[in-house]
Length: 436
Ligand code: COA
Image (cartoon, rainbow, N blue to C red):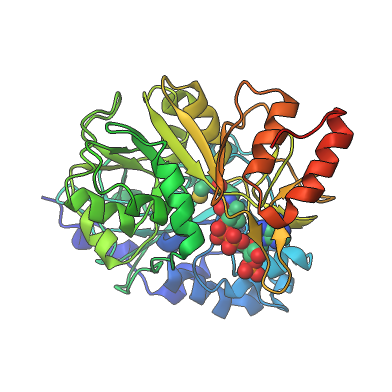
């Protein structure tokens, strides 16, 4: 039994001291999403005046991102691998950057030095009897970044769940800050009528024994609410949220039929409430692994009947999916969408679903099924990769369909207010009548 407080006594420091080891010009990786070590972030920003040109890299930010506030660019420059609510304005205004990358490739960028990591800010569980700390709810790129970093600073927080499949020994940390604070939580989204209709259609594509990957937001939660009568579902997902806990407790998700990691919920990060964090804590049925395992399309492809469910901004009439930009504005990122679309398409019995409301817009209704993607927008999932597209008007199965058949299928699930203009474009493009 390791008495870590004695063995590591010289490394246990105040947060002020830990952050004093960060130097101007350092490149820092933050633990991901709800796993962010908030006390380290806040202290770094408090010490801003002594720092210049510090690069801060992470994917989605669920905290306040004070280093992205106007004026902070003199000290910090954020490099986003996925843009989130609290970092979006800085990226838009040119005070922060965005680096496109598939989620499963982020560890390689860190390990091979394409993105240099001088410092990593971690938030870890308390060590077990051997001194092993768990990365808890943020393993994804965080564990690989820790392996690549020269300097490792960790907040030890008793509220961080101990999850299996990952870890670092306390002796490998350079500076340890003990601080118990609540983890960042993501409250369950509001599920409206449109999401319920979409959820129903997506659920009709899911069968007993299937394994699910779920993206973030109201649609995945709506899908889960339709699965109460299914049997032996599995989870292999880059992330999951509270909705999965309810289905696990009901015995709907058993992971029994998975063709790899049988019996296990597999994920690389988690976002939810304390209910989710309590569920995964010391739970031997939950495996939290780095993203170059969970999202590797070649791993995903080994899971028979895996169904990936992700969302999008726009889908054009060829089936090209823009899931990350509003025109030339970077709104989010590719995340794991293409990792799972490719893996699921390759898997025996797999299906890749893009599910989205047919329209968006608060003041003016905008169709999300469009003749052409907006000028400046990126193609996230290509027309060669796309499989199913679902809206509240139905399901368009695009694989194996010609461009003409795809356009027809997509127009049928567009919002009725926009069908006439899409049909006009269809008839011009394909020189034939639309057979509705
Ligand atoms: N044109 C203009 N604006 C659009 C739009 C379009 N076609 N589609 C969406 N928007 C706007 C919405 O109005 C909304 O604006 P607001 O923030 O001012 O309310 C905003 O974009 C977000 O849209 P919403 O439909 O609420 O998004 P969501 O929370 O359901 O997320 C994605 C949808 C596509 C942004 C999100 O799924 C994503 O980032 N996906 C890419 C990565 C991915 O799939 N990863 C794998 C799972 S983590």
